[in-house]
Image 1: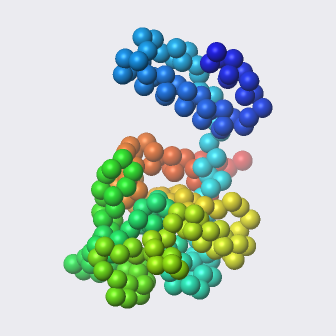
Image 2: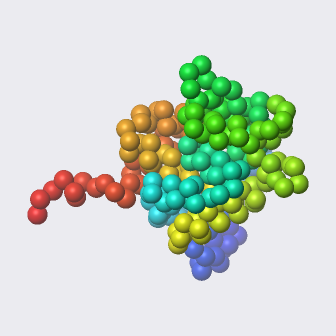
Image 3: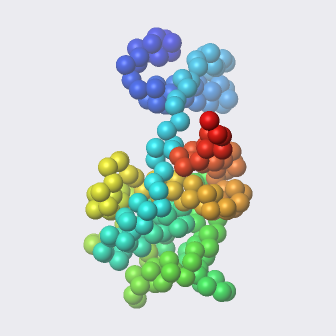
Length: 230
């Protein structure tokens, strides 16, 4: 039955088929692990290989800067800058509270991020980014959200997506830019500028350095071919 289902989705994209296969395998593996099933009947199913398109989702530094500079609204500009500078997930940005931001001993501030996998990490940001955030604070209390909607609530994830989409349109970027593209750009640009891979891993909150290492293989501006003479 599982194989028949996999055969029936032949018209879907490779990424969609891989996602469906992985979901089915995960379900039956879990059922076997908790004793609901005696056998993992989905184990013979192979997850289709998918082309790595990460490099297509990495914006250059100029495009990132244009999106930030061309955004007039202080809240939106600070949001874009923080997505890039701190490499945060959009959910982490939207859930950020003022108590999560503490000034550093020197310049800048520490962001205490409770993120994916229920893990907490501390990220140091520069003074310029910190000042831009402080400009939004007003008389907000420690438990108030940093990024507030027009109704006074915490900015939602769909609202943050719309801010990014509008910024990309203003910068005339003809691509389906999402908030996560800023995270990709953070990783790629930091590695390009010589940041240690373990530091990028810690900042982004990757569970494995292998995940961070993907960005070493996704640089569109470097190749061993450039080192050869034909």
